[in-house]
Image (cartoon, helix red, strand yellow):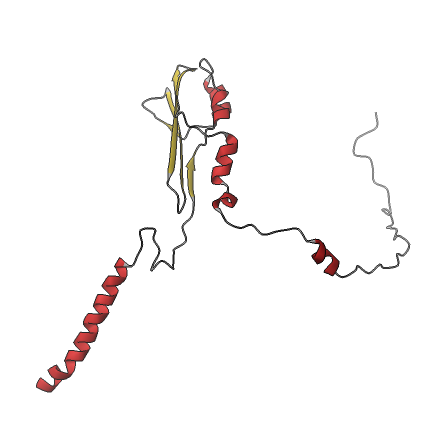
Length: 183
């Protein structure tokens, strides 16, 4: 039995080293989710809600009906059963490597007429919003899709085929009755 304990010490030492290595692996995860700064899990962009831009909000005026507001801003993301006079237009976007964005526009009605709009002062214009969410603006290099003059010259010359007489396709063998009766 004493021989077994003596030979088991290296195995125990190796097991302890393996446990320490595994536990220290958790510490190698960076705050951005990368493992050892190399591997990163794929994370999708999460876009939820209604985008309300400056141009849309400029079309909405107090006194408009609910239908007119819905035409200008779209359907609200939230309608409260207990506060039917309040519509909430909430927009959130979460992208890897950027701060999450959240905007909320609250529209209040009195009966069927719009009475109040609560919106943040920094709503983007449509052009600014598209520039924010456009993946090409993230610094990614886009491929060139047009050939250079040198590449065009390197292309093989198309072979011209002697054109034959146009093939005529015969019409229907019989005529069909008209779809509408004559008047």
